[in-house]
Image (cartoon, rainbow over the protein chains, first blue to last red):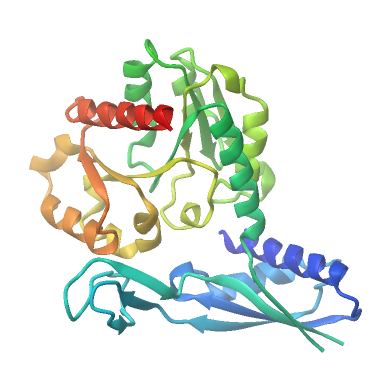
Amino acid sequence: MHELSLAQGIIQVIEEELGKSKEKGIVRKINLRVGKLSFVEPEALVFSFEFCSKKTQCENAKLVIEKVPLNCKCQDCGKGFSPEEAVFICPDCNSSRIKIISGEEFCIDSFEIE
Amino acid sequence: MKIKVLKDVLKANDTIAEENRAVLRKKGILTFNLMSSPGAGKTLILEKTVERLKKDLKIAVIEGDVSTSNDAKRLAKYGIPVIQINTDSIGGACHLDANMIKEALDSLDLSSIQILFIENIGNLICPAGFDLGEDKKIIVLSLTEGEDKPVKYPVAFRQADLLLVNKLDLLEHLDVDLALLLKNSRKVNPELKSIQLSARTGEGVDVWIQWIKKNLELKNKK
């Protein structure tokens, strides 16, 4: 269950950011961007986060998860496409030189305090 | 008030992984991270590998398991340094992370190692998300697992530098289509090289040993 590690990672990043920020307050919301290829299970993440955030500055904060679809671009013909499955072959020219534009990320976009 | 962060959550892991990579590079240690499902044969492959290489090369192994030191004991028989990491004392994590490797490196005599094998925890999902500082990622897939695993677990396969298809001795007893399995692996990772072997019978092990030696030569040239 690597959601536990990810939940700990979220808390660590937020606490670092809070330490650097001049703004102080209670963390209410954390906005995440979760790529399809990150294979994160949102329910498990929320559960892990609730558990790990107890007695931290993130306690009771709500996780808002924006799912990011898989977007690829063919390096040969330039075609952009969003494969349903993780098959990295251009549907137009059959090339296998594919760049993943988005869908791999697991990042904190922002958080809200009050 | 909204505060923009735009930070990768695994950044902390990646930073430590880069530190590990720098330490290993400085000591000239070639490092492999072996990933597979449970029971694909990673430990037996390592046993056969160590048996073949230990005369000429200095090898060490970091073994990752949720629980038990069974695998470490199997490898310690060969008289090489083996560090066992058990994650049941740290929340039962299903993968190794860079910090665990950092701690393991602290307890190894790095000046007397040329090749380090890290046997990750048997799992094709979570280990793929965690860089450890290795030079190459190797996926072991046994024939009994079926042809579709590369497409089912694309992240692990996409990152891999080598696919070791194990249990080749069972090919004639199974309905598995090896050509389709390899085709599926290239759908996910067109550059992926593969070696087919049977750790049990030794078939194909030569090719794997050559691959390791070639990588060591390339590393030493740099």
